[in-house]
Each structure stands twice: as structure tokens, then as C-alpha cells.
Length: 455
Image (cartoon, rainbow, N blue to C red; front, top):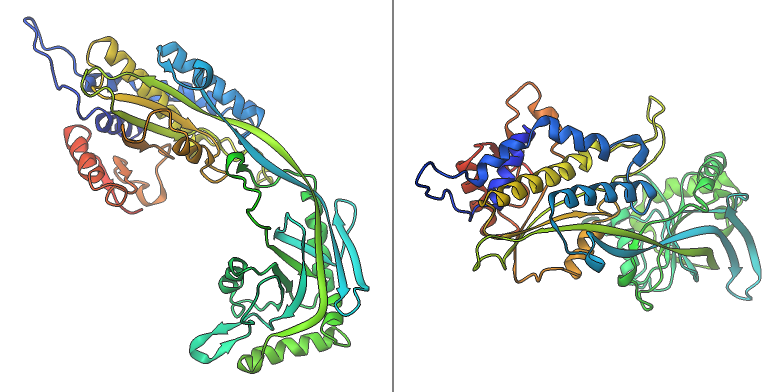
């Protein structure tokens, strides 16, 4: 299957190439002949390196990813492809920002006199009265508004939110299936500082979650592109969970039983509740270090053979990063090798580059130029792809197509025991009015795969 998919890619990329050249003795080889050089063994030889344990899952910005980058560039060097990256290398470097939260301190103040009602810290060594579930990497301070169970249903006349959420914390007695989490999160774009969730009345459950999240302190957070950082980007809202015992105090209740009864009342008559501003202010203050992590795309260039068409560029892309080391699975293995996602697409790019290089040496290379682009940071949010799009090596005006290859390394459950000569074509009728017809034409010229539009 993989060989046939690669042949399809080769055909699509080289669709404008000459079919044959006349010879007085015998027909010269065509570019399609060199697809036969892509074999199961040649793919395997590259894949065992890309997905080896020593690369530790190729997480973005790690030594394992660097090892993979060096191997891929070595392969392109062997082919004689032109390096078009930084300083005539195969690397297009970019910087990423990775915040590291050391601790978060929380203070609840009396709004009338600013006296401290509660102060606590959550860190690797301490457990406080709040747990930040996500977000909240910036200092946040503002009044607390109780929004009941956070329910909203216009048809039934239910809206437990205030009209103005700007600069406010929204205290929510969370109820699964009833709290409108989508609307709650949408309030962040309206200026809400974040949510404070009362998640049941079980103090032990709160403590267990606080303990389980202690290991996250000091660990690197979500990566983002440095050049996109803006000083006026605004604060990052937070989802905080509150100790239910402190919640009862803020709501003026006597005990946890009273809190449980209030939750029952909110569920029984949600339309009767109206948002209530409490006489408290929450200060949320994280201690954050920002580290700069450098990663790189890999860029190798094969110039086209046609004097009039070689200024047009077809990009053949894949991502070579993966998710690294995570929690152990049922076998105790914590290393994610990423042979399929996207080691398979990476070696497909390498092998197609080699086949096209050999075709060019034989005088039947593609008419248009081809950029072989292996991006990083895909698993972190398409970061390498975004960087290349904003910093193209070849102008977008001259870039006529990008064929991206991802996860072609195994048959999915839907096709087990069936003909595996298929490929999922994603975006053929959405991305471009020409892409679908080109794909169909290239397929008819060669492998005749089942072109599934399931995705």
C-alpha cells in the first residue's frame, strides 16, 4: 500500500512532466519508472532510524528531534539536493516560547476593606485552596460573581450569567451535563478573568486532584511561536477549582451540607437564579519563567527541468516531530516512537526525494521545482507549518501546491482484511478548486487507488 501511495504522490507532484522523450534506439525512461525504486525495504531502512528509541519520541525542541533533523539532512545531502535554509543549510530555524510555572499563589480579599480572607499557594511542595486546571499563566485580580450552576438556555428562559463579565471571576457550582461549558469559556473573549469551579462537595477529591497536579510545576508548558508574541496580547484567563470548604465560606453557607442543598436547588429551578456579585476579590499570581526553545524545519530543493516552469514550486511536506515521552501505557512503555505519526510520512518524503533526484540525473526530472519540507512542532499546534507560511523561502505566488503526507504507515480498522490500496484525500474539494481534479488525474495515470473522501 505504501509504495502505491508514494507513487500517487510522485505522480501528483510531477503531473506536468514529459511522458517520454523520443530516442532513435529505444524510449527513454520516464519519471514514473523511478517510483519503482521506492521499496518496502528502503522505507523500512529510514523508518527504523526515525522511530528508534534513541530519538525518544522526537518531541519538539528536544535532543531526539535534533537527531532526527540531522539524519534527514544527511539523507538529503547524499542525494545532492540543494540546501535552501539558514546560512545555506537544510535548516529553517525558529524560536518558541515555553513558560514554566514554578508556583501559583492565591489570595481572597474582602472587597470592602481589602482584608485577607484566605491565602494559599499551590506548588510542587504545597497544596492550596485552589487548583489551576488550565490557563492562568498571567497575574489576574478581580471581583467574584456567583453564576449558580452556569446554566444557560434561551428557549427555557434560563440565563445564570451577568450581562457584563468584563474583569470578573465567575464562580460556578459545576454540574455535569447542565453547566454550559462552551458559553462559560466564551465569556473569556468578553473579558472574564476566568472560572472558579466548585466541583462537588468532596474535599478529599479536591485534595487528590491538587496532589496529582503538583508534578506539573517546574515542567515546561505549551510552546508558542516567539515572533507572534505581543506585549498587548492580554492576560491568559484561568480555569481554577476551589476547595469546597472555602466555597461555602464565600457563599455565606454554614457547611458542606448547605452547599449540597444549594446545588440541588439550582438544578430544580434554574430559571429562578440570577447572578450575584460576592463581596470578595480573588488575586491569582503565578510565578512563571519563560524559556526560549529553538526548533527547525528541514528544507531541501530540487530545481525543475523546464526553463519556463521551474520558477513554479510544488511543496512535498510532512512533519517529523512526535509527542516524546508521556505516561506509561498498559505495558509500562512511556516512549512514543511515532513510526506512523508521522515517521511514515517523513520517510515517504525522503524516499520520494531520492526517486526524483535519480530521475533528474537520468534527464527526466519534474518540470516544476520541488521543495521537500519536513516541519516540526506539528504536535504542538502546527507551529513549523505556520512559521514557513509566514516566512516562505519561495514566494507564495510561485508556490502552486503543497502535498502533505501524514500517517500512511498502517491499515486502519475500516480496511482490515480488505483491499489496502486506498488513500484518504483531505481537503481535495475544499482547499483548492484544482486540487481534487489534479489528484483524480494523477491517480488515473498511475496507481488507481481508492481515493477516500471520508475526512
